[in-house]
Length: 176
Image (cartoon, rainbow, N blue to C red; front, side, top):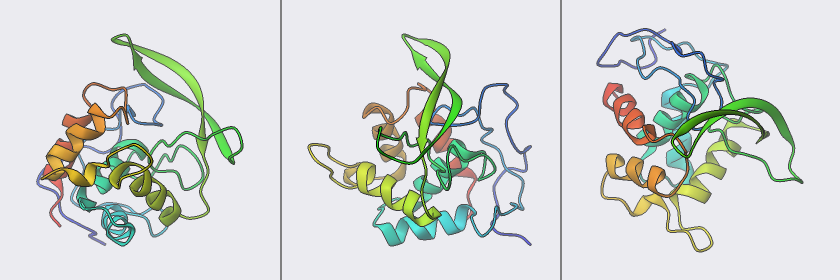
Protein backbone atom coordinates (compact mmCIF):
# COMPACT_ATOMS: atom_id res chain seq x y z
CA UNK A 1 0.00 0.00 0.00
CA UNK A 2 1.39 3.39 -0.91
CA UNK A 3 1.45 5.58 2.18
CA UNK A 4 2.99 8.68 0.67
CA UNK A 5 5.09 9.62 -2.32
CA UNK A 6 8.57 11.04 -2.26
CA UNK A 7 10.37 13.09 -4.85
CA UNK A 8 13.27 10.61 -5.01
CA UNK A 9 13.19 6.84 -5.19
CA UNK A 10 16.53 6.30 -3.52
CA UNK A 11 17.47 3.37 -1.32
CA UNK A 12 16.13 2.71 2.14
CA UNK A 13 17.94 2.47 5.43
CA UNK A 14 21.43 3.41 6.42
CA UNK A 15 24.49 2.94 4.29
CA UNK A 16 26.63 3.94 7.24
CA UNK A 17 27.81 1.49 9.87
CA UNK A 18 27.01 3.57 12.94
CA UNK A 19 24.46 2.62 15.59
CA UNK A 20 21.09 3.84 14.41
CA UNK A 21 19.68 5.54 17.47
CA UNK A 22 19.48 9.13 18.54
CA UNK A 23 19.88 12.43 16.80
CA UNK A 24 22.91 11.75 14.62
CA UNK A 25 21.47 8.41 13.58
CA UNK A 26 23.11 8.00 10.21
CA UNK A 27 19.84 6.84 8.67
CA UNK A 28 19.67 7.47 4.97
CA UNK A 29 17.68 10.50 3.89
CA UNK A 30 16.30 8.78 0.83
CA UNK A 31 13.14 6.74 0.76
CA UNK A 32 11.31 4.73 -1.88
CA UNK A 33 7.83 5.82 -2.92
CA UNK A 34 6.17 3.17 -0.78
CA UNK A 35 6.90 3.09 2.90
CA UNK A 36 6.42 0.03 5.01
CA UNK A 37 4.65 0.71 8.27
CA UNK A 38 5.89 -0.40 11.63
CA UNK A 39 2.50 -1.25 13.08
CA UNK A 40 0.46 1.82 12.24
CA UNK A 41 3.41 4.20 12.48
CA UNK A 42 4.57 5.90 9.29
CA UNK A 43 5.57 9.41 8.26
CA UNK A 44 2.00 10.53 7.64
CA UNK A 45 0.75 9.17 10.97
CA UNK A 46 3.65 10.86 12.79
CA UNK A 47 2.79 14.16 11.06
CA UNK A 48 -0.84 13.72 12.13
CA UNK A 49 0.27 13.03 15.72
CA UNK A 50 2.50 16.12 15.59
CA UNK A 51 -0.44 18.26 14.48
CA UNK A 52 -2.52 16.86 17.34
CA UNK A 53 0.33 17.66 19.78
CA UNK A 54 0.54 21.28 18.59
CA UNK A 55 3.57 21.25 16.29
CA UNK A 56 3.56 24.16 13.85
CA UNK A 57 5.73 22.07 11.49
CA UNK A 58 4.41 18.47 11.48
CA UNK A 59 6.46 17.64 8.39
CA UNK A 60 9.61 18.42 10.39
CA UNK A 61 8.50 16.06 13.17
CA UNK A 62 7.98 13.37 10.51
CA UNK A 63 11.47 14.07 9.15
CA UNK A 64 12.91 13.70 12.65
CA UNK A 65 11.05 10.39 12.98
CA UNK A 66 12.54 9.20 9.67
CA UNK A 67 16.09 10.27 10.54
CA UNK A 68 16.13 9.23 14.18
CA UNK A 69 14.48 5.82 13.78
CA UNK A 70 15.46 4.70 10.25
CA UNK A 71 11.90 5.30 9.05
CA UNK A 72 10.39 3.69 12.14
CA UNK A 73 12.41 0.50 11.94
CA UNK A 74 14.88 1.26 14.74
CA UNK A 75 13.35 3.18 17.62
CA UNK A 76 15.84 4.04 20.35
CA UNK A 77 13.49 2.87 23.11
CA UNK A 78 9.95 1.54 23.35
CA UNK A 79 7.93 3.87 21.08
CA UNK A 80 10.87 6.33 21.14
CA UNK A 81 11.29 7.46 17.54
CA UNK A 82 13.27 10.63 18.32
CA UNK A 83 16.31 9.54 20.33
CA UNK A 84 15.01 11.19 23.50
CA UNK A 85 17.26 10.31 26.41
CA UNK A 86 15.82 9.23 29.76
CA UNK A 87 16.43 10.75 33.16
CA UNK A 88 17.43 8.49 36.05
CA UNK A 89 13.85 7.87 37.19
CA UNK A 90 12.33 7.10 33.79
CA UNK A 91 11.80 3.75 32.13
CA UNK A 92 14.52 3.36 29.52
CA UNK A 93 16.32 1.19 27.00
CA UNK A 94 20.12 1.19 26.87
CA UNK A 95 21.62 1.30 23.38
CA UNK A 96 24.82 2.21 21.60
CA UNK A 97 24.74 5.52 19.79
CA UNK A 98 27.10 8.11 18.39
CA UNK A 99 27.56 11.76 19.11
CA UNK A 100 29.79 14.45 17.69
CA UNK A 101 32.00 15.79 20.48
CA UNK A 102 34.67 18.39 19.77
CA UNK A 103 34.20 17.76 16.05
CA UNK A 104 34.77 14.00 16.32
CA UNK A 105 32.27 11.14 16.10
CA UNK A 106 32.30 9.19 19.34
CA UNK A 107 30.48 5.92 19.99
CA UNK A 108 28.82 5.80 23.39
CA UNK A 109 26.00 4.12 25.26
CA UNK A 110 22.90 5.99 26.40
CA UNK A 111 19.59 5.33 28.13
CA UNK A 112 16.69 6.22 25.87
CA UNK A 113 13.26 6.98 27.27
CA UNK A 114 10.48 4.42 26.82
CA UNK A 115 6.97 5.62 25.96
CA UNK A 116 3.65 3.84 26.30
CA UNK A 117 2.54 4.92 22.82
CA UNK A 118 3.93 6.61 19.70
CA UNK A 119 1.67 9.60 20.46
CA UNK A 120 3.33 9.88 23.88
CA UNK A 121 6.71 10.11 22.19
CA UNK A 122 5.48 12.80 19.80
CA UNK A 123 3.77 14.71 22.64
CA UNK A 124 7.02 14.77 24.63
CA UNK A 125 9.08 15.93 21.65
CA UNK A 126 6.62 18.66 20.71
CA UNK A 127 6.05 19.77 24.30
CA UNK A 128 9.76 20.18 25.01
CA UNK A 129 11.22 21.26 21.66
CA UNK A 130 8.48 22.81 19.56
CA UNK A 131 6.58 24.76 22.23
CA UNK A 132 8.01 27.04 24.90
CA UNK A 133 9.19 24.90 27.82
CA UNK A 134 10.79 26.26 30.98
CA UNK A 135 13.29 28.90 29.85
CA UNK A 136 13.44 27.42 26.34
CA UNK A 137 11.78 29.09 23.36
CA UNK A 138 10.41 26.32 21.17
CA UNK A 139 11.06 25.99 17.47
CA UNK A 140 7.38 26.78 16.72
CA UNK A 141 8.67 30.40 16.73
CA UNK A 142 10.36 29.78 13.36
CA UNK A 143 8.85 31.13 10.17
CA UNK A 144 9.33 27.88 8.24
CA UNK A 145 10.05 24.20 8.81
CA UNK A 146 13.54 24.75 7.36
CA UNK A 147 14.24 27.52 9.87
CA UNK A 148 12.87 25.28 12.66
CA UNK A 149 15.30 22.53 11.56
CA UNK A 150 18.16 25.03 11.90
CA UNK A 151 16.89 26.01 15.35
CA UNK A 152 16.83 22.37 16.50
CA UNK A 153 20.53 22.18 15.71
CA UNK A 154 21.30 25.60 17.21
CA UNK A 155 19.40 24.70 20.38
CA UNK A 156 21.44 21.48 20.77
CA UNK A 157 18.76 18.89 20.05
CA UNK A 158 21.45 16.99 18.14
CA UNK A 159 25.23 16.93 18.14
CA UNK A 160 25.50 16.05 14.43
CA UNK A 161 26.48 19.29 12.63
CA UNK A 162 24.63 17.99 9.54
CA UNK A 163 21.38 17.36 11.45
CA UNK A 164 19.46 20.35 10.05
CA UNK A 165 20.53 19.69 6.46
CA UNK A 166 19.56 16.02 6.79
CA UNK A 167 16.10 17.02 8.05
CA UNK A 168 15.67 19.53 5.22
CA UNK A 169 16.64 16.89 2.68
CA UNK A 170 14.12 14.42 4.09
CA UNK A 171 11.36 17.06 4.17
CA UNK A 172 12.01 17.88 0.52
CA UNK A 173 11.21 14.27 -0.34
CA UNK A 174 7.79 14.15 1.36
CA UNK A 175 4.81 14.70 -0.90
CA UNK A 176 2.05 15.26 1.61
